[in-house]
Length: 256
Image (tube, rainbow, N blue to C red; front, side):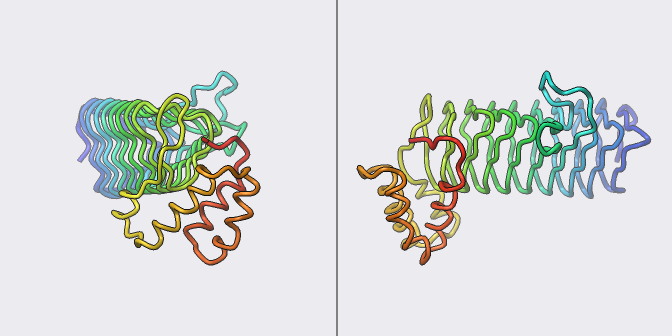
């Protein structure tokens, strides 16, 4: 399962059914879980732990040092879940000691060609990074988020679950759950209704989310007033609670 032309460090730990293609390099302190497939010409450095059933295509660079001038070679980590796909020339960096010391990728994510996840990012499950989508350091991405091609997300920004970032969006502020943004700087345009339907949200839930979106983004209320108005609805409807809680927790400005 390991091509004779690949280089695998004796300090790496590979499950017995891992496949490694020609000219790939697996460095020390790398752990690869069952049924993971590493194509040709990929480089994986550690400390990095990768779960089961991942697919890593050619020229991907996984787990290398963070692109941060303050980084001085400290032993930071990258942790990746299961069933992720990393297409051609993806770059996923380890963390830094100025944050959590670890970059975390969940499960069932698709990273298309040339996408980039910088140091100390946290990416949830079932996200899609289209070609050349890029995260700055310390970014948090919720579950089911879609990043269009050439999207760029500024450092320390948070993107809520089920959000949709249109192609070419330059995201400088937090994006709440369910919201579609576009442009430079990215601004909200609507609720990601089609995505919510595909994920099993009911018509009532989507209507509740749209109503909450209008109160925050389309009324003349101040943000504090809008949140106060939504508080009773948040107590009754979990989908509204997620929206309101995200906004309350935001430490940056919201995309508005």
